[in-house]
Image (cartoon, rainbow, N blue to C red):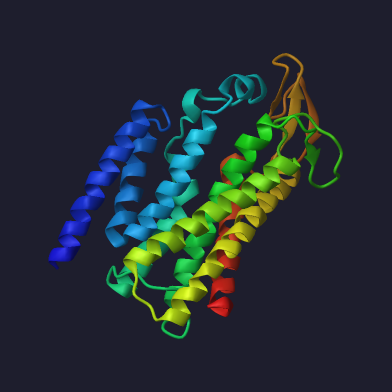
Length: 287
């Protein structure tokens, strides 16, 4: 009981500092900072390793968002100074994982576990889903932020035809490599923190290294699914007045691709759900 109280207190402290800092640096607006605090506090209260995964995603993505802001401002019609995210974007990128973290914490009594389906298939699925979730989110963000700065010509994933920068569903080799690397960062974070937070026998502990290539695949897969949905179900058009790619049709907008079925947050949510589910199932068979 005492350990849980201490862990919860540390969770509140870390969440407060990170949320306040993110708000002051304009990485989050007021609503984003509030929900970010709640999400991060829950992650760390359940397990330091879950909190580390969230921090790895948030910190690296926030840093990359601020890189090349002048170029991104000239391309992105929805550009916000500092990449400021609201509560909807916070929950789209962490809501599902938070639910899985809470369930996992209830089943394990907030004790960190290795991936081992023989010990608990359900817990292994839950942890695998969390890894897949943040690999997908990180992969999508890195791919977008780094890909937008690439000098390579973006190509629409469905036709491979050259399109303007900022088009939903456009990919570059640089962006795809960034997505894979982003997933690897999540996998590496999980493995490294596990050395300090879990106790498993040698064979099981050694097998945890497979999380890294799995997370690399999840990061790349999540980015590809996001691009495919963006190219087909999310509208992209070129506004002749603003001279930018926009996400809504209008009298001065020439359509590039997609339909007005999903917006960016919905695309992110669907790609995260699919990647979370598939990574969860993969962990059940691998571990």
